[in-house]
Amino acid sequence: MSPKEQIQSLRGELREHNYNYYVNDNPTISDFEFDKKLEQLKTLEAAHPEFYDATSPSVRVGGEVTKNFNTVKHINRMYSLDNSYSIEDLRDWETRIKKIIDGDIQYTCELKYDGASISLHYANGKFVQAVTRGDGNQGDEVTANVRTIKSVPLQLKGDDVPDKFEIRGEIVLPWDGFHKMNEERVEQGLDLYRNPRNTASGSLKLQDSAEVAKRPLDCLLYQLAGENLPVKSQFDSLTLARKWGGFKAPQESKLVNSIKEVFEYINHWDVARKELPYETDGVVIKVNSLDQQDELGFTAKAPKWAMAYKFAAEQVSTRLEEITYQVGRTGSITPVANLEAVEISGTTVRRASLHNADQIEKLDIRVGDEVYVEKGGEIIPKIVAVDLSKRPENSTPTVYATHCPECNTALVRTEGDAKHYCPNDMACPPQVKGRIEHFISRKAMDIDGIGAETVGQLVDAGLIHNYADLYDLTVEQVLPLERMAQKSAENMINGIKLVNKCLLNVCCSD
Ligand SMILES: [Zn+2]
Image 1 (cartoon, rainbow, N blue to C red):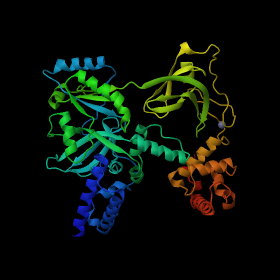
Image 2 (cartoon, rainbow, N blue to C red):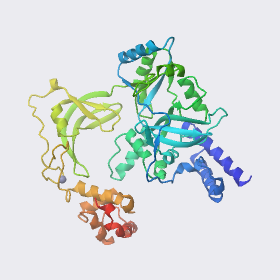
Image 3 (cartoon, rainbow, N blue to C red):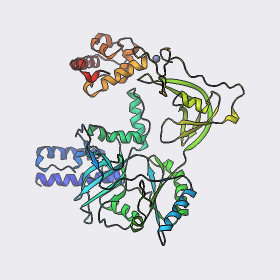
Image 4 (cartoon, rainbow, N blue to C red):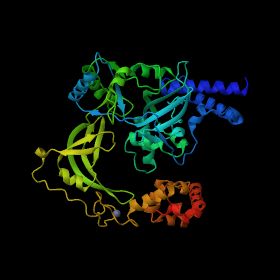
């Protein structure tokens, strides 16, 4: 085989394995074998740059860095959908539709995944561009980052693939991957990611695509757009998309004949969704026939042929045992409700966010109260109401903290600001640690050998009080710290010296 043939054969093989693994969830080769073949391909490609192909499976590892994301106008506007919350809302919708459409109407029901909306463009069977939803009229081009997502096909197959089309869907972060990422954050002493959706959309805007490649993102697709596509219905387009080369068009989609069946679908998934690997917050119902969709058209904001249905968030009641206060890196104070442990959506909840003093006052939340806790897509649930009928007789209104729980400085609150702050930014431990961590994690200040945990140790040991102190550290000083060996101490001090030059740079001013 010539090198060219070898490269092509390896690419074909790896594509197939990728598809089996990430789209079909049915691996046919071990990870070890896969990596070996990928290495082989990379070596051959490096030796033969003339055969470069942007759709090669080797590009999945990323490496391309985007400083500024280009703004791109959507060829077809990305509309948002109208929301409904009850069967009555859906019946009203059907009544409106039936005034325009004669004859039977079928609906496709799809789950509404909580992720970052994305539009993928294909030309001549190849992936060419990915654009975020943005404001619906224009979004940011994130092609290099999306290319690293394993379930996005870079090369399509079949002879009926249109020359040019767009497919839309959602970039999601499965629960598994989200929890794994948060475990790493805990190890690094960093704040947790709040929910999979924000983390997924944040990932799309990372500058280094190699970082995106490390994140376990997935891409679910459910809407074709373009001129003269060979489809007559929404449901067919899902089937075709799967056939064209492995778009992950969710298998949970279903074709039904009436609003009553739509509601059966909703009731089923309101429970069954808890077993899904992704966060879902509702159902999207679309008129199935594309001709009927054309007849219905759009309002100024949304298609008339589609409707989102939002699942009610699960609520439980439990007792509020204590209110504590957390100090953030900027000194902002967040009140936290410590609760009697309770199950919500399969997880045990002991803490809930209280947001700020206004929120506590508005709901008149008091220690000892029976409170209603709700969990949406956030990992920290929130308190939505108080059961006043169960309020203890000796209950007293909550008095908000007046002093910082970490350094005992009097808290301040600026006019118009919802949050209280600890003004002791030079000596309040979480603020000092946070600022130093922030400083060393900056791109320009990427100091090898220091993590959040080390910063915590250094501050606690009184060795540093601000980031400038880092430069006076010596190997002898840091060696006594827990888990610090000679080699790592040296690496750390050398790492600091290496970036010492940047100290006067304005980029480090905060
Ligand atoms: Zn403080």
